[in-house]
Every structure is written in C-alpha cells, then in structure tokens.
Image (cartoon, rainbow, N blue to C red):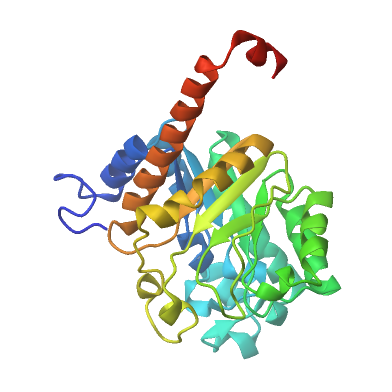
Length: 304
C-alpha cells in the first residue's frame, strides 16, 4: 500500500504524513499491529496528534488476550525478563503458560497504551478475535465475559473464527449470549465451506455498536499454512459482492448508535478501493431513499 502510486500521494513518505492523508479519506482505521505487539502510550499520543478529533481507531486485542500465541521477542523487555526460566527460551508462548501476575500485566499494558485514544474519545472498540480452536463452551463464554470485564469502560466487539458457534444447535444461543451481555457481534464476509467459516449473519447484539468486517473470499488461502498474511486476504471484491451488503449494513445501522465497516482484504490498495466503493453505494442508498420520501404524499409521511 505504501508503494508509489498505489494509495498515498507523492510526498507522503513518513508514517505521520501517511496517517494524516488517510484521515482525510476515511473516518476510521483498524489497528492490527496491536495483535502482535502491545501498544505504547507514546504511539497513541502521536495518533491523536495526527488525526482530527472525530477520527476513530478500532484496535485488535493482543494475541495473548484471546488465547492465541505470541512471539516472546515481541513482548516488552520488562515482561520478557520477568518470564519464568522455562518460558524465556521459547519462541512462542500462550496465556495459559503465564503466571497470573504476568497475564494481568498484559491487559494493564494494553489498556495503558491506548489511554490517549480513550481519553480523547477516539477509541472505537477493541476487537476480540478468537481463534479457530475457540469452541462454543461454557469456558469460552466465561472467557469472553472476563475479557469484557477486564476492558472495563473500553468497548469491545467479538469475532469468531469457528463456524460451530452458528450451527443449527448454537446460533440462537450465541447471539442471545452476546445480546444479554451487550457485547457487539462482529458480522463478517469471508470464505465459506470450512470449519472456520462464519456465515454472513446480520445481527446487532448491542445498541451502541455494530461492526462489519470484510475479509475477502479467497478460499484457497483462508486456512493455508505458512503463507504471508497479505496473501491470505488478497481479494478485490467486485461491485455485485459489495452490493449484497448494502441493505445488511443499512439494517444494522438502524439498530446501533454507530456502525463500523472495516476492510481486511489487505493487499495493496484493495481495501481502500473497496471501502470507497461500499461508501459510495451506501451514500447512493441514502439519497435514493431520501428522494423517495420526498415524493411520498404528505399524509403518508405523517403516518410513518
């Protein structure tokens, strides 16, 4: 995306210039770097300084916060040094390996790093993306509630990567669980036909926030091993595929105070291109409906 002529204009060569330009094109960005490395407060302060006050950041939870492995070398030095001897020499670790005090420290450092965004009102939500081996069990539901409680006043949203949460037996229970606890369900568009596939369900489980994420439909790479992330999500939606989601997003937006639509088809300018396209489609939808309302007879407008 940073290659010449792909998305950024000539002269936007630094991280500061790129973010400033991006914020003139879109009202929100998803930060995925926090999945790999804990955020630092200074970086969040710079994000605030470089964007308008109404620009929003949705931030992905660190891997250890959602039961996924983290590379030891990516942890802050004080955490690495505090690891027990049997963990310090490992390449990757899981949260279940950590002493309680170090697991608590992961959450504390994560929230501290995002505090500048929270205090300025620019932190949209924390994405809790659970892995394929996170099954619909009581323990899993308890883990979601624990994560929600640890985040406190910071909004969260939950994305599943295992289709069994929405099979015939579990679908209603899953959505009811999220609704009863006011946790936003992340609606997804992604490859179908695999165990990790979640159907494109439209469901708003919180009155505060609805989230839609587009992962592309590149089936052959979705569960492939040892391929770059950018290749897994290398997919450019055609207009007809995006158009399928216009009424779904419209319906979701009627039920939630905010609706975030995020493109995760992260290859070159694919995400930016499709984001602009779906934004245009949604705007046309609004204008078409507004024109129709103006043409309705006055008595019908009063009765609606």
